[in-house]
Image (cartoon, rainbow, N blue to C red; front, top):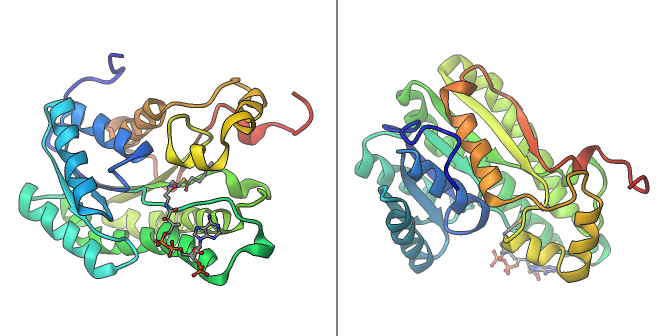
Length: 262
Ligand code: HXC
């Protein structure tokens, strides 16, 4: 489908996108490239991320590189920022999308399981934000875009680890918006609801559970990766130049429904 945004709306921009090899963040990478940005996608496995960058470049005609790094390791994500600067000379946008998740009852979840998800989602967001800070400040109109969730707005069964991590991501979003706004960096988040064709939803709501979930969403369907990518283009664009500290919920109204009334 044709974009609602002008094709060159992100020309000159450079973005680093963690988790950009798959799912929602690959969709954001594709949209940024299609609108003129150059993009470094980051994920843990070298062969996966290199193949993703190649495919993204071919699909969009844009310039993408893939760098392997684990956001849990501050030096590794700092090296990915350095590689982006070396290749593209600047960094305007950091998308913190790397995330881990699985369904687990709290009583059966190990400390290490809890810590692993908090480490990836929350500490990874902090690590990458710090690593990108100087470059984003130097860019003059830097943006950090965190991929959050709506899990923690209520208690969500089997998701204590991811809910705690994403609540932390929201806190990081607001704190960095306050601290780094005066330095010219906007910090926002997108909180997607259930998005089809993602690893997350395949794991979290397989089969019939997924259909029941979709029937309870006010818009009566899952969202699409393209709908999250559109929100990410908007938040990067000049149309959002006065938006910071915001958590944009893109969930078909799921988080505002009352259970049992639909
Ligand atoms: C219980 C589990 C588990 C599971 C892992 N662990 N999977 N516990 N149930 N299914 C525990 C392990 O037993 C171990 O604890 C600890 O977690 C670390 O596991 P490792 O496999 O050693 O860690 P690692 O290789 O770093 O992998 C971490 C991972 C990751 C989180 C499991 O591989 C992963 O999730 N990959 C999928 C990525 C993904 O789905 N991303 C989309 C996220 S969607 P012990 O105690 O045994 O050592 C998302 C959206 C949320 O975030 C909102 C949706 C609406």
